[in-house]
Image (cartoon, rainbow, N blue to C red; front, side, top):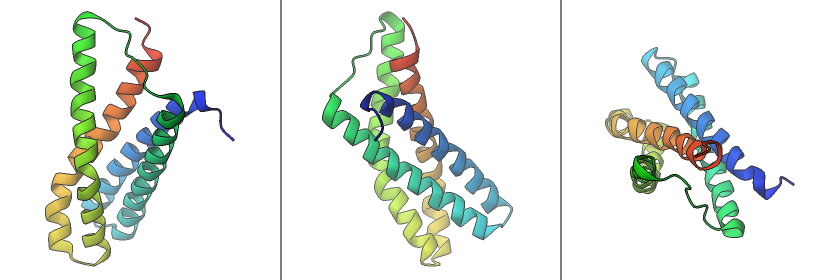
Length: 140
């Protein structure tokens, strides 16, 4: 069993893996390597799902972690956190819908919603890593 104190780093790793898989999946789609695209995007779904489970577990047992920075850094942190949190909620139905259309071979609908889903999901994954860094690695 993993130590509770290690879960934030695990979560950041899962977010980073999700971002990488999203970028790979997009690249594969552009190359028309559709099987590789599907595998990368399902991998992104898997890592994001594992992230959510790990995140909820950590916060259930640990609670919140307060950001220690001050001044402009505090404002930047909260701007990132608020946009990240709002888009993390928005991305769930978008990602589920994108995956559903893709796996159902409804490609025009899949492409249309994926054009919205991908940049938002990528933003959420990358800002998740930034939030981890600001909370746990940035010594202010």
